[in-house]
Length: 627
Ligand SMILES: Cc1ncc(C[n+]2csc(CCOP(=O)(O)OP(=O)(O)O)c2C)c(N)n1
Image (cartoon, rainbow, N blue to C red):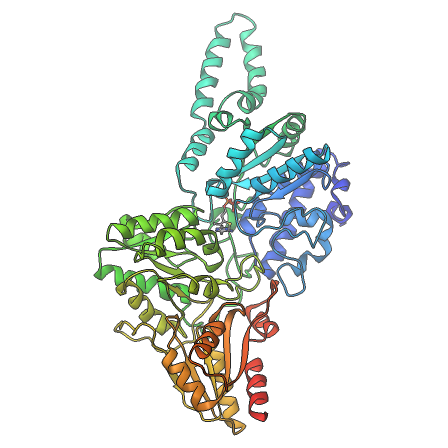
């Protein structure tokens, strides 16, 4: 049977549909999202929760002339489907396929690139000012989740927008969830609005009043039920936003297209900044996702019928770096009561879930507030605690000044654990953690290390909590190398690397995730009669200058490999050391990520494209030896 969806090539096509057809369309879109994400993986629960909202916005507003800005953009699958990408939706997050996030390069309907949270209000205010200066009359609409609203940037945007008074519609998509249940005072405030303490009180007052009017009271009571939502919408809660200069509308039922459309049509006529509070359910329409929104927030391929991961592994994968980190931190925290753990809304993602259960008093989820999280840690460290800040490499970028100004300048002992260092794969350019070795090693006092495997990660964590001053451990997404795990944790000597295998023709000097490729390359080179020494530097800073200079002098040919951008990273550190020691008669090949943003694909594909995998090492080594 032909779907309504098959005739939707552009939002203009939905503007002619009647309400029953729109409701059917919403279900068809949901089905397509579930089927596709079950194969490609992706952000399922958030996108399912925003289907009606997406349709209502495109129905009422004149996109793309009216600007629609998504926050994070992980909830925008329905938007992608109805803005001309239905037929390529199956390529979601795959190499060469469409991105998991809105992207200007992909569609005129994607007016601002996103991936990191809480940027939407600021971007929208910029567009609103541009409209004023250019004399335009388009609307600017934002969709931001309650989790993303908790970040400093969102507050900065609200503060600005409420003061400037430009026309702006901010839709707060409130599902009470960040990835985990949302945290913070704003979240509690929204919750009070939602459960309707004030609304319930008003409703009771009105009912009592109406009943007290003889003869017409009963009719009025029925009528009052019909207008209750409008009353709720226009008169009561949201005083916080009103006080900041917004007209507050809500809370609105986010899965009732009729009400959403009617309300948005009224809102479209309003002037100045409007905050529309919409209540949605994360995972809406797919039972498993409704029941387990956390697991279905970002999910790998799964079976639609059972909701379970695809393909039960015959041989289970080695422990992930994330899990190794979480388990080791629990071990260390049992021995040292000063250890506390901090996450910025990524408790499970960073592997802190076990820590949170065992040490609830020493665990802090600060919400999507990386800057706050880092300075909060600095405060804890200033009082003698040992804060371990677990934030993905890409999101740590948010807190760069806090790392420099609040932690490193004061030489405070804060342990930074940067998961997802290197390529993350299908989340793409906004999420790769490929800058951290460069941005961290540039800061005075900072120690930076990266483990070659999961076993070294445990020892590095021990090292990090026992050393002094700011220290960062950076490790990749995914499984470890399946190496045996030592029972006893032993701190490493700071700034000391190791030789993993001896060789006489050339050296491969590397660190972290690329050690594995280096060892494999060395083995293959050995079969070709080329003898390669593999050096695991362990520390980017302080670098083991003695080992590196000795290796360079002895072998004269080195291949340096890292999963970080070329500029200012590990390779740069090695070259600076060699130059500083006056060693200039060495042939060097530097394999690192070139100076360009790298799109989505699997980690393996990306390592190949960037030229930092085993094949690239082999090619560089053969070329050097031939010379
Ligand atoms: C700066 C930053 N930190 C963390 C994340 C990871 N992240 C992606 S979505 C999300 C939760 C967002 O919650 P909310 O805005 O309420 O949207 P929902 O998924 O509930 O629809 C988080 C923490 C991010 N994208 N950006």
